[in-house]
Image (cartoon, rainbow, N blue to C red):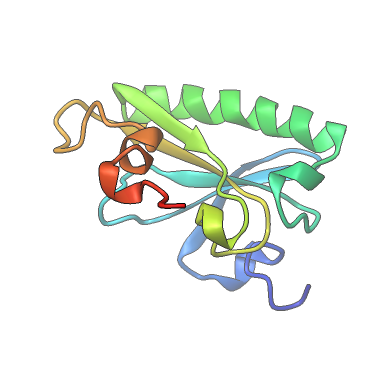
Length: 128
């Protein structure tokens, strides 16, 4: 997949690989709002998390723990949001599986509101 930015992360000059293991890497860009957030990405192209191999799952978990330890040491967040978006309706915009790791802080305006908060709003109710 020559045009997939996550298959060739070095092509995005704003993005840095901070950690990697055999099958995955962790990348960050300078974020204006979600400071410290980044992605764990399988090195092989997988469209969604549902396609990850057992090895990629294990390597993702290992990197997740490494990244959390690093973020705890460098940023001291009060919490985390961690998740995958899958398919267009699920909010996926880059069709290469990637795990979002978002440190959260008690002084944020939306502190205490998790991923499901926005989905549970009345205006998101299906009318069928």
